[in-house]
Each structure stands twice: as structure tokens, then as C-alpha cells.
Length: 637
Image (tube, rainbow, N blue to C red):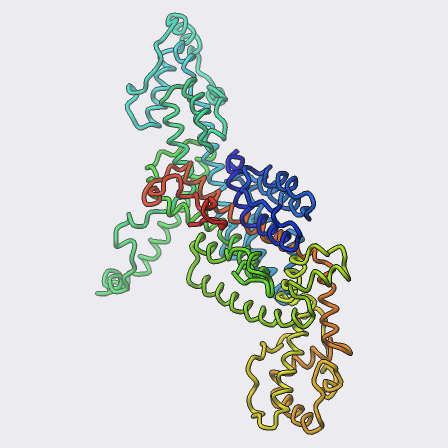
């Protein structure tokens, strides 16, 4: 019900982050770009079916995939143990697994790290998101069940109270007064009717004692768990008409306290200062100085005995609570505790959100704000990573890591741009090449360019490693061939050396052949014997740096290394639709993890009735994912 209420906002958010940028890319090489309509969708149906109708001649099969992902996400109820759809998609979606496999080195390392994000199973030694998710969902289940029994056992409809005995009316007053913390006489009851008949019925019914099991007979079955987990005004009006305004008042209070209790933290600031601090000097003076150290073992033994007694008492109280469930009547959780509740939401949902953010940052260069090489700026998507880091309140460490990834991808894109020009596969040249060699991709030049860039950034099929090795050895050979060059230094602009050959798609064994075989390859300049001698000496001097490149070129390059790179990228072009689907699933799943944080936080805010510093924004405190009307990018907190 709650997610259905959010369908319009969710549709606009998915549209701005996933669907509209894709339509803009696919329309970039169309002959009639004026057909593109950037009007925001009115609901989920307009987002998917409406766009399919508006663009009947486009490649819109991806809309079905995104719709299925969103429908699967809707299947999980907030605060329920089945609300794990976004993390399940992140961990188990075949498109993401296949895309991650392109970066084989990291794929082999990340299995255990991603496994800790699974909300359906326990994490490592120190818990992880599953611990908080399991604790909060179980807490809500238990407290809601207690409230459910309490209301159905004691709440009496007004029409029945009017004909009830004085004993029954008084019992209702005492229950409601105890729960509202008022005097029993302050509980308003309907005027009694047919008193004599009610009194006689009540006397005969109470003449003989009843068994304990009979006393558990419920007064009503009107209340359900939904009443304590939603704030539906129409339902509250029905309860008020049937049970009275004070029952509705208690229901609203229990609903707030139920959520606050599950998302609370112990208020350490309320403890005395001596219990919140550790002072070694004070401990020594009070426990060890003046000969007290002789009695310290006795003190330790007494403390252990008291701890054991406390543990036994806690077990007894827990068993008693299970056998005799009752609603806790301890002090109310204050309304200014939303910061603690938000921390609990983040402990459940932030790990999956950050996992999807880092995954997209590594696999989707446009997410980092880096344009596709040779592509016009009009088709670039908005740089969303910084905005997403602001939304989640990322730490300085996270921001530094994000900047490191961005700089690494920026350096890689400089090489990618050179390779695209070398093969004649720039944004302007690629459509003609596709029309001649792959007619089914004639109108999908933007997608094909993105597929090439993604494959090279991820080093799919070792294409980037092979191309970088060729370029690096070419730079080193040109430097060594110069008689005036210093053979002790490396030329500027070299890529990172290849140090780990175990993560390559195509394993390389042995020494990669004789290094002199490099001079027979057509990808390197034809140097004279003197230059070749200098080059061999130079490569051997810098074997730690050049050794990996030499082994890759001789082990994977074949007779013509650049032609081998072209062949591998040609296979990527042939699978353009696969790469587009994978990237779109990645963007959609990462967006769904954001909606997870958004929905949980907003629902906690609404049901908990929080106030305090966050209340300055009113109901907009969790309107963070509302798209801005003045910009095509979403406005996040």
C-alpha cells in the first residue's frame, strides 16, 4: 500500500535516472530527434507503457526488463523479512554478475565482500546489515503481536459497552486508563441501556469461576497488524466510530511508540557521567590503592556473581514475557530521536546502497561525470555519484575512494579515446561502419560506442590490457631508440604495469617467448640493428616494469596484436544489446537501493511521528528523491 502511494515519485525518479538518459542516447543518431519527449511520467504505467506507445520504432525492449525489476522490488513489504528485493537483485541478478565478470581480477576478489550484503543470511563475525535487519524486523513483529493481542483482548465496541455489566465497563476503563496513563474515571463510556437485563446476564455469567484458558477469550478480532503499521485516516475513522476516540488516541500513540521502540538507541547521555567514562586513576584510587588490591579478587568474584544473577533474571523475564505476553508500559520514546532511527535505517540499507554505488562507479563511467570519448555532450547523463554520496551522508574516506576511482577511469578514458580514433570507431564514424558490417546496429551507434567504452574500461577479454601493453612497449621502444635518451629513466605517459597475470581472461604461462620476437610484430616500428640492441638492453634493465607487457603481447597478440584487439572489440560491437541491457540493469538496481533507503526512512518518519531538528522540513524531510521541477537531475538531500 505504501509503495503504491509512492508510485508517481518512483516513476519520475526511475525516469530521470535510468529511462530518459537511455532514450536520449538511443535518439542521438535518429533522423527525427524531435520525436523525443522528455515530459515527466504521471505514474508507473505512463513510465513504461506510455513511453512504449510514444516511441514505437525505437529499441524499447529494455523497458520490460526495468519494469520487471521494479515489480519485483514492490513485492517486499517495508519492515517485513521479505523486504530484501533490492539486495537480492544486487547479488543475484545475472546481468550484474555477467557485467562484473568482465573485470575478472575484481570479480575473483569481491565474492565474499558482496556476500556480506545479503539480508537473507548472517554476515561475518560482527554481524553486518543482516544483524540490524533481523533485529528490527523481529522487534516489530514481536511488539506488533503484543499490541494485536492486547487490543483484541480488551477493546470492547461502544454498542456492546452500552449493554455491558458494570464489572465489564469498569474493566474496560481500567485497561484504557492504564494504557493512556489517566484516571479510570476519565475514560468516557456510552450511556448504559437495558441495565437490568445486562446486570442479570452479567451475574449469571460470573457465578462460577472460569479456567485460565477461558479468560483468554478475545473480546474482538477487529484489529489487525495493519492497524499498527500504517496510518490510514479512513481506517482510524472506522475504529473511532466503533470503539471511540480514546481508543483511536491510544492506537496512534502505540503506532508511534512501536516504530520508535524498534529504531531507538539507548540514551547514553542520560546516564551519570561516572557511568559513561572510564578513569584509570579514579579506578585505582577506589579499588586498588591503600591495600585494597588484596580484596580485589573478592570484588571481581562478587561482580561476576551479580552478572550471573542478572543474566538469570533476564532469562526468567524473557520466558515470562513469552508465556504471559503484555504490552510494555515503560517510558515513552521521545519524538526527537529520529537521528538514532535514521542510523538504524542506514545500518540496514546503507551497505547495499554503497555496494551498488561502488559497483556502478567501477562499471559505469558516465555515473562518475566522465563523458563517453568522442560523443557529443548533449547525450551525456548527469554526474550522479557526488549527489548520491551527499544523499547517504558519505564519509571523507568514501569520498576519497570515489575520487580515486574517478581519476583512474579518467586516465583509462584518455587511452580509450586514442584507440577509438585508431580503429575509426568514433561517434561520428561508427554508424557508417555498423551500417556496412552489422546492419542490425545501423541506428544504434550511441549504444555501440558505450559498449566499446565499457568493455575497454573493464578490460573485457583483456582487450585493454593488450592495447595498453602495445602502447607502453611502443613508447619504451621509441625512447630507447633515441641515441640521446637516458636509458636509466622511463618515458612519461606510461600506463600502469601489468603485475598480476592470474586475473586475465586468457592465461599466460611461461616466459612468453623470446623478447626479440617483438621486433617481428607489425605493431612496432622497424628499427635498425643498433636501435634494436639499445631497446633490448633497455627492456631488460626495466624488466620489472616491461616484463608484464612483453608477456601479454607475445602471449596474446598473435601475429598482429592490434588486429587481435580489433577482433576482440568487434565481438563487443556484435553484442551491443547485451552490454546495453547489463548497464541498464546496473543503473536500475542502483536506483532501487536508493529507493530502499528513501522508503524506509520516510515510513519511519511518518509512523514514528518524529519531530525535532528534522521537523523543520516537515513532511519534506524525506522528500529527498523528489525530482526537481527546474532541473532534469533529481534533487537529493
